[in-house]
Image (cartoon, rainbow, N blue to C red):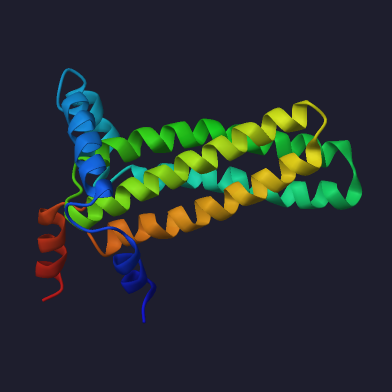
Length: 192
């Protein structure tokens, strides 16, 4: 069985509480991105000027930073070198800022999701928020001298982001959220 089948079975279906909540949230996001900030939302979507959604490009920023932070956390746990600790903390901060940019580009793409994809996107967003909270709390703990617990929370955050990233790939590649119909037709016509 593919993992996508597992997701389809685990996520609540149409009419569920998740479905109702995701519809409400999506309509609120839609009213914002189609209102006075529509030109900004269009630019943040990326399709028109970049040729594809901006969100998959921007998510590399926090994920990359958090991977680097994880590397330096592991290293600093072994070496106790303050330079490794400083590098880990800096990478986590860069990741938090990048996560805010990624969330913004993800929100403008969220309005394109329907049905199962909308529910899955809501879970993807919730997981990303959980990871962001874990990283922010990790940074606060580090500042208070509780680095080992901070490392544990950051490692947990990286695990959550990994699951969420996999869901993000499923949302884009299987459900086609953010993919313009025309671009799919153009690719198909060139391959003939």
